[in-house]
Amino acid sequence: MMNSLRTHWLSNIRGDLLAGIVVALALIPEAIAFSIIAGVDPKVGLYASFCIAVVIAFVGGRPGMISAATGAMALLMVTLVKEHGLEYLLAATLLTGVLQIIAGYLKLGALMRFVSRSVVTGFVNALAILIFMAQLPELTGVTWHVYAMTAAGLGIIYLFPLIPVIGRMLPSPLICIVALTVFAMFVNMDIRTVGDMGQLPDTLPIFLWPDVPLTLETLMIILPYSLALAVVGLLESMMTATIVDDLTDTTSDRNRECRGQGIANIGSGLLGGMAGCAMIGQSIINIKSGGRTRLSCLTAGVFLLVMVLVLDNWLVQIPMAALVAVMIMVAIGTFSWDSLRNLKKHPLSTNIVMVVTVIVVVATHNLAFGVFAGVLLAALFFANKIGHFMLVTSDYEDKASKRTYRVTGQVFFSSAEKFMAAFDFKEAVDNIVIDLSRAHFWDITAVAALDKAVLKFRREGSDVEVIGLNEASATIVDRFGVHDKPGAVDDLMGH
Image (cartoon, rainbow, N blue to C red; front, side, top):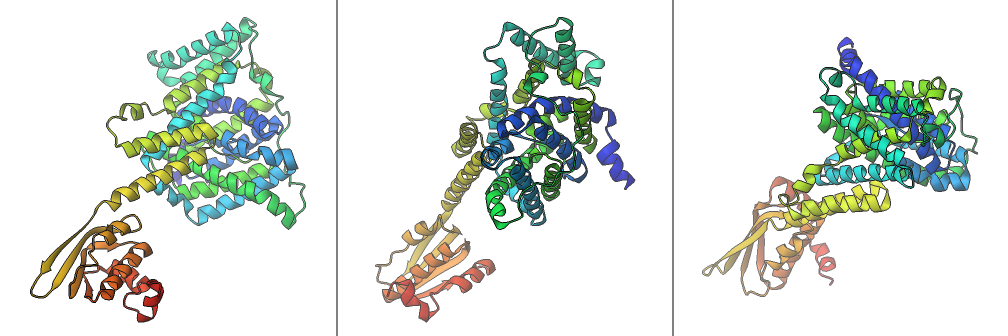
């Protein structure tokens, strides 16, 4: 237990505390902005971010990953809030948590192995673009002071680490926020600040059971939204976990993360917060600022609440330009620049999957749609590629009037048509041997193709022998095949 405590909580105390403070500062404007997107009071997003970050620190499966209220989730809540109000959103948040816990126990986190590297790269690039685009409203129609402050912030972020000793001790995003805030207050600069985003809460969150009727009608209203929130939340969390795994050269427990996200969302709903999930932007800020363990996420959540309740007079003075600079740094760091350099090296199918993922995500602002499109395309390209790895050869023995067909490769829905086209059903041959010792049958489409081939040869008067099936192929052929079951022959051949 002590080893686990030291590994997951106390192995990087200074780095985690400082990184948590930086993340907390970055969470505030985003939580307020996401609340506005969802059409609810800013405190709903702030309470959610506090609760989710604190709870996930203890129950999540990925140390160092930050979870809170997110834009991807907020976009799914708009219609529910507009048509039914906040109470139904809180109920949907609770149901979202329950569905995510069920997903964790069903081990659905393991489905991430079906997401190819090109889809993950497209997801990352699209998210970097969305993060950058989200900063554009803060850089549109503003005075030159905002551009100067943003440029200064980027200068601090990228140049401060070059300073000997101290540059490595303190995270440059924190220095950027503090320095620009002090400067703006000192010169009394008239630029947009965190206080302009909305009113901050002045009380602790309280236990709040959703005031909705416990009826089937209520369930039917919130279930579609909860399903969408659960899927998008888990998908974004799993993708973020994969990216953090790569950044830290560690592994995560995805099924525990599914359960943890569910528990965190239930806690958020009971404290008056909206549903949330892992945040790739804040997670990268955390990693790049030195955060590695669960302590960084806990610090982010606790410090967020402390700042909102105790340091609110200072907090509202933070220039949005400072936070924009931090988020631009995140966008630049998130984008996979190697993916552009590798466009000429990688196969065309890989590039298409990556680009389509980016386009769909950016066009819909929905990460789930982009990932689903990418996974579907990757599966189609893979099936098409494997379908070509099948060859049918034959030789003829004149004395025995026997032709032997030798099948090599994978026979499944993509290659079944090619399998059928390799046979000459009009050839006058007494004996046909189909040698499958170097083939593997994967699905019922392949079995149906074998059935049709055998029965067509028999219809032409040939004796057919199927040999060489491996154990797995023999099992599926015995179970679903009908060429050796006389009662089913007429049905297969359409009488």
